[in-house]
Length: 313
Ligand code: CP
Image (cartoon, rainbow, N blue to C red; front, side, top):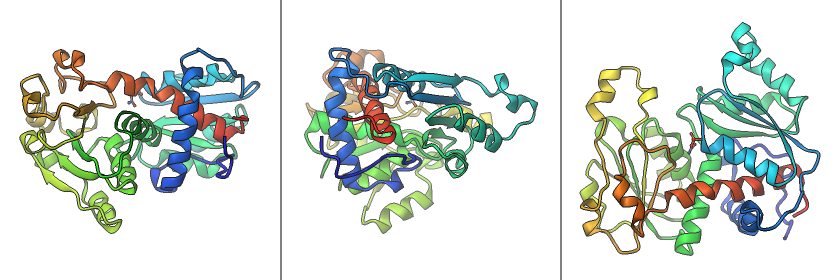
């Protein structure tokens, strides 16, 4: 594997810190990791390394796939699953917690309810920090696996019609994904109720990079022309007022009827967990690729860990 791009010791905080070339290199390494991610081959590239998994918000996929990636590579994992079980419950700050954990491991994976928490952690940690989702901010490793899934399924991302659907205001996955898709020249449509549309500052940033996203509230407007439909859960836990959530809950639901007008090779992705956005009947159609997408978290996170921690690939 070429080592012309060095990721050794790099933080993974935002997709804005990566170039298209960086992302393509990570995807190439991820591809090579697939047999190891499946356990068909074994390589202990990270023997002796320790991953510090700090999860201050619930997670199934991100936490477990980072753990799986670490174990597949021979590394060990120390973890925190809730703040109430740490000395944060006694008043310790995040900064002090990071300083301590930094000395116990070789890289920190942080999920936190506050936007900017990973950047703060990266500023105080000597070891690299990987953002595993910070509030409504971003979720860069999810974006890398989303891009990897699109490239595997479509051959290339350039020029694809991609609809991002659902909670575009509070959903961190769609924030980092739209940033990255701009680098690949995808044509973006944002489908959301007006109150959950993509934040203006993100739209402005995308336009500055030459992307001209379309916005609509109607799934019908995009279903015929989309190559990829990336749907997200409405993030109930982020609404300051529960009655505002009730107004938009269940706005979009994809079922077999919705898909009657779709292209035969439409790919449906979802970062998961889903609530009611995709009817279970869709799971057995050729469009449903979200469980494969979730598996791709393992090779992508294996690739990142190897690149950051210097595992000889
Ligand atoms: N996609 C994702 O971040 O899932 P989890 O919240 O289960 O980690």
